Length: 116
Image 1 (cartoon, helix red, strand yellow):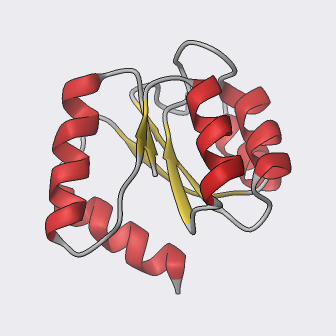
Image 2 (cartoon, rainbow, N blue to C red):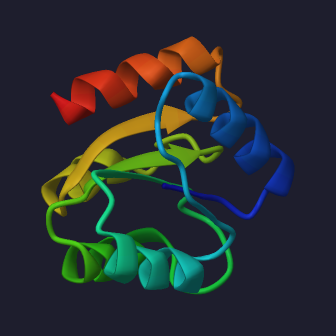
């Protein structure tokens, strides 16, 4: 599952991961993410931290409630200047990637390692 409010980014990542053999669902805000997570219980969710609806720590907390077994990976353009990464990892986040992505292969590697 990919949830980000940048539609072109979601399309690009979704298309690439589909070509790699992953089943991909998409959402464009925190509320869609939570609704889909409750229904689908995905193995992994790629979440943007800043988007409409629940976001950031609130989204992570609610995602853990909606789908406890889903591994969460944060994709964000906001670099960890405030030191939030350790706190988010403590809250159950499995990984981080910062946008713009250097390559989709890097994302694929992170997904493979997270799902092991």
